[in-house]
Image 1 (cartoon, rainbow, N blue to C red):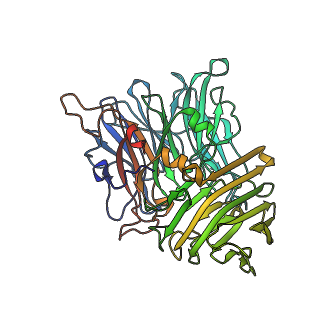
Image 2: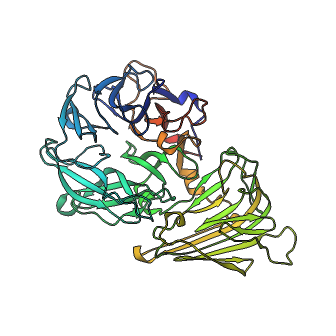
Image 3: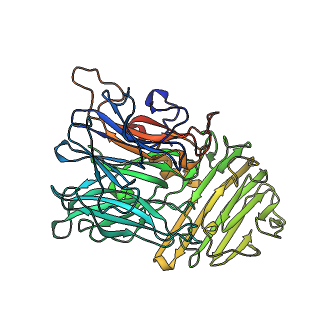
Length: 537
């Protein structure tokens, strides 16, 4: 995966002050070329003190004038949009409130967001001179449901037909009981829809923390009705999706796959909507693992700096789904949490055999006799409520599992723990995974073989750009972002790497590897310049 994490010249601090939790930024360009960044000043992640700030750069993000206070009493996750005629609009789900500027952000007028009743409001999209569109989500009821471990969500579409003075609920974009779909980012698609209406695409966060990807829905009638949610290939929160001048799609987001950080993806519409789930990997050391004709060799010492893990497609509805995973692997050494497969439970792999992480379970030895140095086969079959293990083709027992539990859903391969007791040397030769989701009418089949010459996460590694890594921070403390495409060097100024055809992304960053980091209390607002060429491996 290409990374800008260590490219210090690409990063800038927009605002960082001791004792302030600075977070949830968005950016836009005003008509006069000023770069505006709206964000929050909290005392902690779930703030008991919340203020709305605005910061301005006149040189494409290199220097910032300092925070201006727009709302001293409340704010949460502002979004910035530039509408026709140079109007700037900040949507803020605290209240909710709208903030308008007609003079490139010098002065702002506050307006109640009449009719907006859901949180995490998206950037406003202009469908016509009078019609504005946005989204919001809401956790319906308060009782957590076991498969998602929280109350269900509904992702809603809002319409204003009087240029934002009042808003009305227009439609439900998505509400699936086994998915926590929220934080939609909506774009307009090319071509007219039904009866000439705009075509829209909503890309949504999935929040059950089991490795589900983002999902998307399409509307062919201007947001009145929506197709079923379908999986995208990216795993992340708070996507910010938009078109580039080159005609490609760019999304920045908080990556919550195996290797957390602020990431960006660039590609075509077909690549986003037609690729299905993509395996994501954790590979902190570029030298590990190594792929050869013998297999994928994972040779790791203990700790986070060398751990290798792959996130495979999880079960969406474990109450009804069935799955089968098989791998051919040779384990030469493994600490307690060094090597394993998670399907339903963790199956820890050792040179001597397989240890199910289940009450009362014993080590299941590899089949005997077996030539020294030969790989072994592990096959795990999941049926609702039951796991069956096969070791080198021989039955290894049956293990009950809760078919209603969210913990049953993740499917992972590699280090059982990311940070401790995870030293390992293992050679993976092939893997395959099949999942059947009859209630959702969906099948998923994936196969990987080292002989193919690519790592299991080759798709994501070739297409996702790491802006900043924050694998040691809590996911709450990084990764909400917004981006703009820069207009180029100012007249009379020499173009720099940050200029002309480049993008600027603002995000909040915890700095989990810094000595003063405190979970839920540490975050600042930073920015990164990048270009399309940075996505090339």
